[in-house]
Length: 160
Length: 291
Image (cartoon, rainbow over all chains, first blue to last red):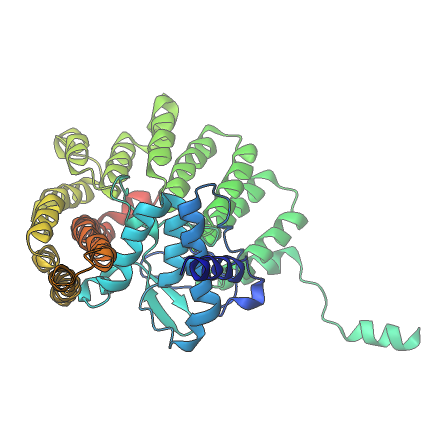
C-alpha cells in the first residue's frame, strides 16, 4: 500500500511538469485579460503566469494535481466551465496566489457551489471566441483583501 | 528598371498633410481608433506647428482612451504637456491627464491630478471651480464613496448658481442618496447561516440552486461519514481510517461552503454597486467635456 502510494505520488509529480504552449487545450491566455463593462473585445494571447515559483510543498503538490488533471483528464470532459478563467486555471491561480488552504477553499467553492445562478449574468464579461463568459478571477474571491471599485480596469488590453 | 518605374507610377500618391486630418477624424468617428491614431501620428510627422501638434496629440489621447489603452493615452497626454505653452493649454492638459486616469479606473490618481490643477489659481479660473469640484466628487462616486461624494457636493447649487453644471451636481447627489436602496447582503450573516445549515447562506443571497447543491453535497458527505463511523464501530478492527478520510473531505467542503457564502454576499454587494454606478454615470458624463 505504501509503495503504491509512493509510486502514484511520483507519477503525479512527473505528469505535472510545466507544459509547453501546445499542451494547453485553449492556448496561452492571461487570466487577467478582460473587458470594460459593456465592451467585450476578444482576449489576446498573452503569456501564461508561471505557477511553480512557490516553496510550499502543499501548494506545489496541489498545483501538480491540478496540472495533472489539465494535461491528462480535462480533454475527456466537455470543458463546459461557465466562467473565465476556467475552473482549473482559477484553481492554479488561487493556489499560487493564496496558498494551499485558501486556494482549495476557493477552488472547491468555484467548482461545486457556484455555477447555477443568474447573479453571474451581472458579472463583467469577456469574449472567448464567439461567446462571452462571466469574468471571475481569484482576486474577487479572497475574503481578506478588499476589492475596490471599479471591479475591472482595462489598461492596454490587461485588467487590473 | 523600366518595369519598376511603371510599377511605382501605379502606386497611389502619398497623402498630403491636409488630407490626413479629415481621414483620421473619419476613422475616429467610425470607431477605428488605431487607424485614426496612425493618421494623426503621420500628420504630426508632417507638421511643424506646435499648437497644431498639441491638438493632434490630444486627439491621439482621446483615441487611445476610447480604445481602452490607458497607458498609451497617458504617454500621449504627457507628450502633449510638453507642447503646451499657454496657461490655457496647460490647464486643459492638466485636466485631461486627470481624465485619462479616471478613464483607466485609477480614481485615486485622478483625484490627486485634479487637486494639483486646483492648486494653481490660474488653472482653476480657466477650468472653472465648479467643474473641478464636480470632477473630484465624480472620482468619489465611481469608487462607491457616497458620503464623500455628498460632502463635496454640499451647497454646490448655491455656490455656483451662475454655472452650467448645477444639473449634473443634482443628478450626482440624487444618485449618491439613491445608493441606500442598492440591495445589501451581510457576508457575516450568510456565513453563519451556511454554518448552521449548509447552503442556507447561498439561499439568503438568492442563489437557490447553488444552495441546494451545497446542501446535497455537504449533507451527503456528512451522512456518509456518519454511516462509515457506525459501520466501523460494529466491526472488530476499529480503525476509523475511512471515516476520517471521508470526514476530512466533508469538513473541507463544509468550510468551503461557509467561505463561499460569505464571499458570495460580498461580491453580490460589489456587483450591485458597480451596476448602479454604471447606470448613473451616464447622467453626469458631461462634467468631463471641457468647453
